[in-house]
Image (cartoon, rainbow, N blue to C red; front, side, top):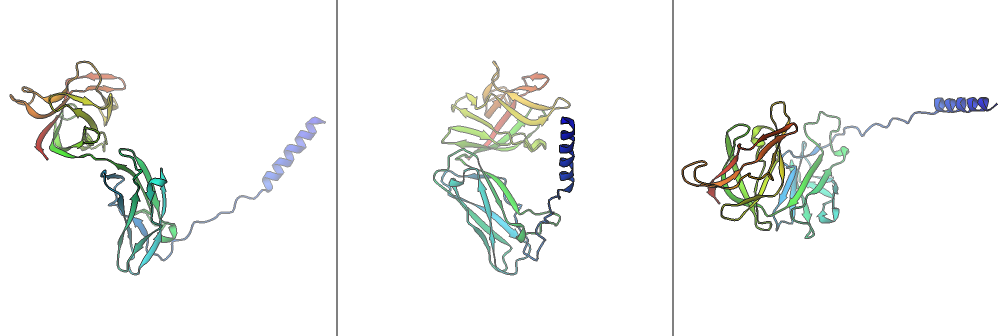
Length: 277
């Protein structure tokens, strides 16, 4: 008897499932006859503000600039109370680009990353076209006081044995120096920054125990440099390293590692200063 009851209940459930209608398809808004508004490719994905800055600008563009147009902008931020987002971006007649100015408050912390997202509704875009331009924009916003300190050449003695121009920056607030995207010229798009303190004489102290280079070596995978091993040298370039006399610049004699092991030391990275700013 119990088995029959269970069978009847299961059959009823199957019948109900078979009769249940699928959700109705709701198409997206059609591409209308509009100006096709989008965020310019000129906008950087990383917005760096000076310590005294109180705003930043996002460039918004459109394909048809015949008439004046007010376009609503939807905004989101990881900490919304830090930002003031205008409700619209305004295009004048004949104007193909417009500035959307985002205000920042005095509560914005130094050296902290904030995420910002902007978009315009699809009624102002050509949503179903092949997208070469986009109605959305995402950025990381940070306020800092790093400023150019010197120009120079960064020499890599592990991957290539070659060098490339690089700007050395200094933060008076942190009392730290920074070399940005040091290995990016190798074609990896690496965003690795070397940050260090310098006593003004010969001693350099790195700000991290290791750095991922973002560069693969043969079949060994990504290379990480370790800074904490005993006997590794970080400092100014003494006589005999590059020339008979001391050279203005720095040596970073990392330990080079991959997941399978270590290549050891002896492949220094050098930054030679050519001009102090």
